[in-house]
Image 1 (cartoon, one colour):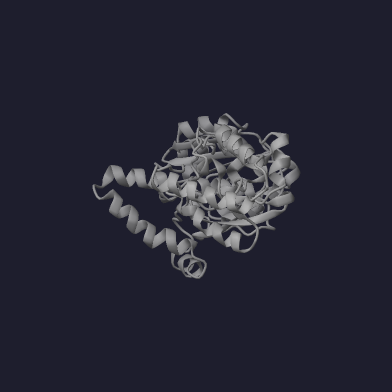
Image 2 (cartoon, helix red, strand yellow):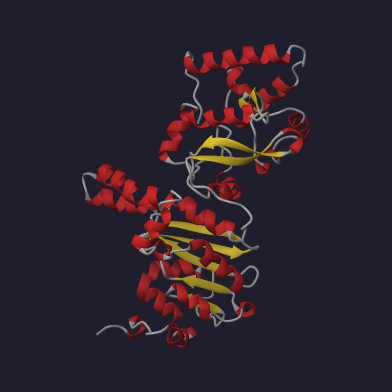
Length: 366
């Protein structure tokens, strides 16, 4: 006989009154297993009256006033929530400050790992899946038709995208469990309000907000090497892993497989020539960095950096120095302290030095 806990209510209103506080832990255990329950119990008091368990997206409409909501556990997979940003925004609106949210999704990585275990032609299946689902769901003029055909069900979403959307919606990530009951579970607290003044891009060519001369923010053009919404996760990645030997965030799950190839051969940097034509950058100069990275640069070097335009080719490539954070900063200081006399001729010489290091000496990015 089917357990009564699994006899889902016929309507959201019935659902709301049916789940008593003393049965919430049992319900999670019955639907997702004891491992998931143990994970949830690390962060919230599951059976507390101010903890809300949501089974379907529309259950959110019937949640109690936000002054009483201390935790929300969403048991509906985010693969099947059509408008994720709107859903996160609604969750944020009904939760009190520092309230905890727990959700789950089957990421692209978990989907491919399952396929790899079941099929010999995993790479072919992965490519066809990319063509059929990933591309039409990201291309602006194809997305409406794609959502109409799929009704927003079984969406393909990366770890970086769901976490980036979560942070953009006013949450701080507490924990991520990448493979639990075949899903990735993520936990966060409400620490702010959703950001909706920006325009996140998922296209191949995009603009990164970076600090230019005199601290002016400029949009630096690049070919995409990271999953969509990755820009909102830099603080989280640095907090978890710090910087790697290449001067970039270590163990960065935001970088795609094709992105690693493009970075290695400097292909992703080519669109920065548009910034040169716009007069925002030079061919050679300090790297255009984010505000977050700029905070980690020594004060004296910060002032020197702001006095010059950033460049497409960083000094460590021209000087053939290490690309670590320390090596990059040392090369930038060396470059910035060079005399401005004959600066144009000097930069032309450095461009040829960089080309020689990349083509002949096979210097690679990371």
